Image (cartoon, rainbow, N blue to C red):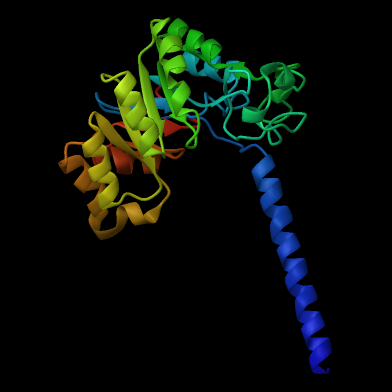
Length: 282
């Protein structure tokens, strides 16, 4: 086999491998997880708070009214949502900036009017067939469900956008009897909320905990750390970074914890808030 043939063969192999990996990741991205709902009442202590991740998405499509209703019925302390603002000023709950993964059409939420989004139905997520003609959820509809069941509204502020419109969020929250908790990867979003609603509970969302994250949370004030339960870096050196956060007086939270043994591990370390897709208190 000459050099040219070897190069062509190698390139073809690498291309095929990349396509195979791409298809596998594509399927993984679009296919809803098959969650096993489990009670963790024996693990919880008096301070443990369970938060339904994107609503109770093990039972209904994520970030939809049915998912929030299921979270309320199940007795979750809080229901987490992700929010975006449409081009015409309507706040909606959706995880991705684009609708493609969950709905029948593809639109950029922030570049679309709310009426444009209503043209699409949900066609993905657990038990989606039970909810025909399911539409995107308005933020105020989500708040109404939280108020109905006495759940905390755990609100993830996505990206770095729309800080100039956060007063709209505060006005919507203040119009109902709901206790909000704001979370974000973006510290500036949390600082803006702190300015508008100083008493609000805040969490800086991170993958792996670093010293600068702890300092940022301390500087913001009334701000905890919400870390990825599956990142092994967080458990190195006898869970040094988790213990640093606890010892600094920060409230610690994890996302997304779906196995009782992982929950036991973090609860033993002093983590109080557990965001989960499928663990329940009952």
